[in-house]
Image 1 (tube, rainbow, N blue to C red):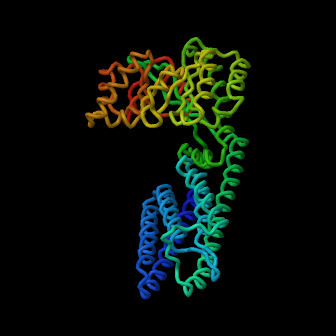
Image 2: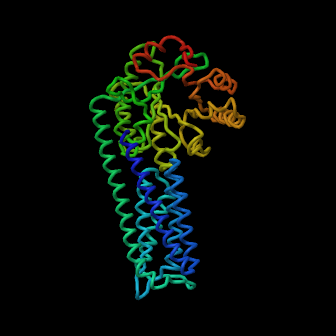
Image 3: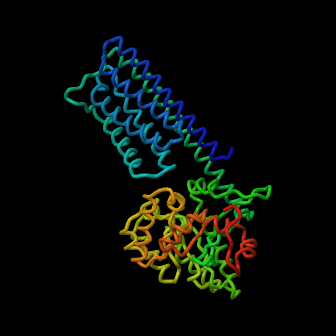
Length: 442
């Protein structure tokens, strides 16, 4: 089991135990309140049990982010109602239910580090703001129905102990995350030092099947000689904030490849596409560093293609546009990768100096069986033609997909039908100098 899988397993286990513990505690209180005919409090406990069990089921289906957001928003609403209506402080006992807001805020922070969203940030802020208000005032609603004093004294101790225990659990999960990030950082830096990373090259071809370039795809060598696909380490590297370091290595290797191709008249025309991570692209010195690398090897910048994902448009769009304009002015091709799956917006296509859009493989693979996908594909090609963008279709695996795309006017292709990603030496041997035939597995 990898470190990422081990962390996810422990995170899920801790979250599942917490959900069941909350459900069990609420069931116990519900029984007590039912015996005293406090039906409004019973209804609150039933709501807590329902949220806890629903969150547990979502987590079991590996929809952990959805479970975390659902539980935080739901428990926040329940705690706000409970503090304003039932947990009203008096001379017998203080208010304590608001302590669980700290647990929600810490849980939200952990999830925010996993998958950042404005909604999650808003939930965290609201939890902390509500905690300050309830801790500093005796605020309640005019129709408040305070819990009877005989329950409040016992409940104060029980809820305080449980809230502190949950805080300790959340801190333990955070410690696991920090330890995991340190392990990942050491592991990836060791891989960079020991030259365990390698670029594979997948051909990009024109309508005649002639190689026009390649996309460089990152792999990591295993000790047994095999290779680890990027899906196994890129997400962990992104969470650890190490993509700029990896991306810098990729840029260096890409420039080395272009310099090699530039020396040979048979390969001088080839373009090389590389994927650029948002964290790497948003570094203040990204453009200057890239241009310095190009100048150091006296490369033709028109041979380099940067593939940027649509998710990058979620960043500061003005900064993104400024960087893209600088790169475009230098002659570098800007390609919008995985088009149609992220922050697709016609305003982005209008504002940004994009030269090429790359249709996501999901559209290509589902098009022959889906009329809706075919209509969307045709519309993309029509818009690209009017805006004078070139279009690359990736993920082509069958002749049927190829013929369909050709009927829409597509002239640039990539996919297993033409060739799988291979090491540089094998790419040179297979694809340079002659049209690549379909792969044997097609």
